[in-house]
Structure formats: C-alpha cells, structure tokens
Image (cartoon, rainbow, N blue to C red; front, side, top):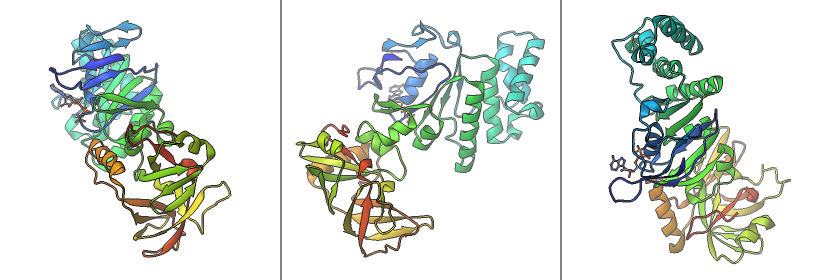
Length: 377
Ligand code: ATP
C-alpha cells in the first residue's frame, strides 16, 4: 500500500495517505476503533472499493484497476459465507467448480486442503452441523484450494463467544504459520491484534498511527492514542512536570532515568503514561534495578489472588483534561480516567484507606506532549 487515500464523496478521507508494506508470508493486522478505515483499506486491497489516490501493489504489480477476481486473493468473511445446502466437500470445492477445474484435480485439492485443516472426517456434513471452529476452517479451505497469493480476514471472530474466539485465534495463528501464506487481518480488538500479528498497523480516523511488532507497540507506543489503545488494563495517564530527573505527579514526585528526563526537558506540563504493571507494593518490590517510590492514599483495593489492583484518585488540570477527553473519544468512549490504577502482586498487604508506599519502575514511564500526543521518550 503506497500513499493510499480513500474519499467517499468530498468529506473527510476514510483512509488518509496510508503506506504499509506487507512482506511475503507475513501476518499483518489492521486495528483501530470503529470508523478508523480498516475495513475500507482491506476492501481496497481485495478490489471491492475504488482507490481515490495512491498505489496498491501486489507482487510488484500495480493492481488499482484490476477486478477482484484478477487479484488472486482470498477473502474470509465474518459470517464465513458458506453455502448451507452444500456439503463441506462442495463448499471447499466451490471456487474450483466455478473455474471449471476437472473432477480429478478438484478431488485432489479438496482432500489435500481438508487434511491440512483436519476436516477430512467431515467432508460429507453440511455447514449447519459443524462447530464454529470447523466452519471457519471450511472457509479457509475454500481459500487454500484456490492457491491464493494472500488471505484477507475481516473481523472473522466477532460473532463468536469469548471462549471460542480464543480457540479460533490460536487456530488461525497455527494455520497461517503452517501454510506460510501472506495474511492481512482486520479487527477492532487489541488482544486479537497483539496475539496474532507479526506486525500491527494501528489506525485512527484514516491515519496510520504506528506500524510495528506487538512488543514494540506495547513497550514503545508512538503516541497517546496507541499507548491508550494497546494494553489491558489500559495505561494510566497523569499530569506531570519534569525538573531535572524529577517528575512531579499528582501524588508526589518520582525519579526517572536521565535519558527520559532529557527528552522531556523544558516542555512544561506533560502527560505521563505508566502501565498498571509497572507499579508494585514497595515492601515486596525487587528494587535492585532502580525505579522510585512515592506515598499515596489508596481508595480501593481489588485483590484477585495472584495479583491486586489499587485505585488512587487524582485531579487533572484543564490543559491535560482536554487532551485526555479527546483521547477517550478516539478510543470509543471509555469514561475519563481520573484515578491511578496500580498493579500489585498478590502478596501485598495494602488495604483500602492505607497511606501506602508504592514503587514504580520509572524506566517504563512514557512522557507525552499534551498538544500533539507524541511520545517524547
Ligand atoms: P468498523 O469497525 O465500524 O467497520 P472501520 O474501521 O472498518 O469501522 P470503515 O468501515 O472502513 O471503518 O469506515 C471508515 C469511514 O468511512 C467511516 O467514517 C465510515 O462512515 C465511512 N464509510 C465507509 N463506507 C462508506 C460508504 N460506502 N460511503 C460513505 N462513507 C463510508
């Protein structure tokens, strides 16, 4: 995808100058909240949507003007688009029948694909008698027999319950690696994006925010949006001012590594981003690697056995509030967080109402410019 633009009418572009290079055999996820343009982008890859500007290149060839059937891609839809009156065998064979392939080749390809997908015992059954996972595999089988150059998935798991979604997620990951086929996958679910993708493209309002491995997105988010979108429970955002290597937070001050302090020097009021898991009860924390401690009055503690979460309310000044409110809107309307969420190990004895000493691994702290959202660290 080279500088791809999509405009519907003369409104705000649904996809705005997006460039993504998907390598051969790579699994790339397009993720973002509703309306960010991810489905439009996928539909432009397949050829179901005209491209307003830019170049779509597949295997070195510009395909902007090619019809979907000339692109040799296989789309796996949300509802699997299986024919209920046809057997599993005929559902998988369908694209070959359309292409008038001879019976012998059809049989060979269907048997090969169904073996790979472990469907060989179900070939005579109808889709209505299959589990969700098996149906998903039939849909993939149909894509495999065509020897497509790439698989494209549009939210294939969004109709499934949480348990099946988890199973299917690992199934898709396993099959994609086994087949080694280039895959682009659309989802609004950050967990799906993080667990499936070799690389993840995060989109917001038609703009590519960051294209990186799940680990890079998590540890080094490019901006406030990516930081808030990736990770569960979400990252804390706090008003912060930096002086030397000291960061003033609503509850007190902490020391940060010199390199971070330098990047944030002279910038005035900033937004500090700290994930809940970067904190610990100071009395049980391993502090040998550095970090910093502060004291705060804990409002509520949720103890879950192996871990706990402590909640500490704070007030954000208007300059920071405005940016955070905008962020909440972009993230699809979560309530504005005005409390710090501190992750603790299950060994903690901190209880509600305590003036607790809390340790934070400040090497994991990010500092964001409140006007642009850019990660300065
Ligand atoms: P969702 O997860 O809700 O499907 P998405 O991220 O896939 O969202 P798109 O469906 O690509 O987003 O839509 C991107 C933007 O383009 C949205 O603002 C949407 O309203 C607009 N849009 C999509 N299709 C059309 C269309 N056919 N005509 C006009 N506007 C459209």
